[in-house]
Amino acid sequence: GDVSFDSNAQPVFDGTDDYIIVPDNDDYSFTDAVATWEAWVKPTGNAGVLEHNIMCKANYSLNTREYQFQVRYSSGVYYFFLGQQNNNTTWKSIGSSSTSAISINQWHHIIVTSDGGGNAQMYINGESRASATGWHTSQTNLGAPLCIGATINGTDPIQEFVGSIAVCRLYNKHFSQQEALQNYKANKNRFNT
Image 1 (tube, rainbow, N blue to C red):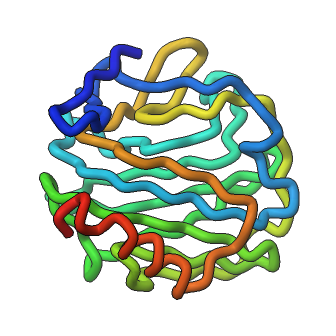
Image 2 (image 1 turned 90 degrees about the horizontal axis):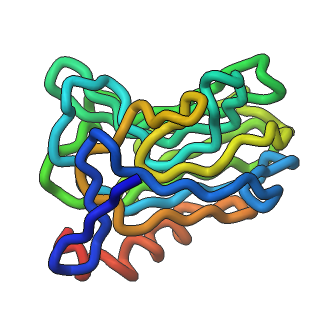
Image 3 (image 1 turned 45 degrees about the vertical axis):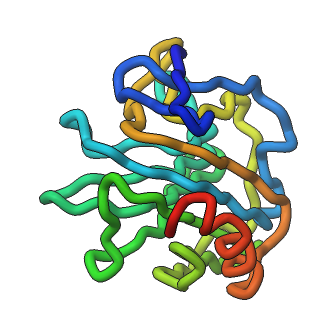
């Protein structure tokens, strides 16, 4: 994709053709479902699309969706969402609610973490905003690339992000609320939150 950068060297995604592709690697799949996804994002609009991917490991045309970490836009409100699929069968999701809606043109720190025992937690700016049970306890690498700023459908991007994504990190460990807060505090002055 054709990603540009702002004056602070943060990647800016325009919602039409900006994305970053990283080839498939087992390091981006979490076979024991112990994982943490982290991002600093600043959505700036919706470009008429409901779902805007921050990062995902998926290829729609091949039906290989391992996970999608995204901003969702509905009825004028933005939410964070992470969906996870195991062996193309069951889609599990966790998302912030209307009580924790996010604002456009503001930076947000998001962490979603899975403990491998069927539990997931979402933190926004260091605060717990959602939890889920019945989460996957295993994961399979389905061969899809890791994509930042969009999802891939065959060779074409879809669900492109509109705004800035400054940090995307994957961890093969579960985060406590203290660790989520620590990561937020480590960069909050950089993003004026």
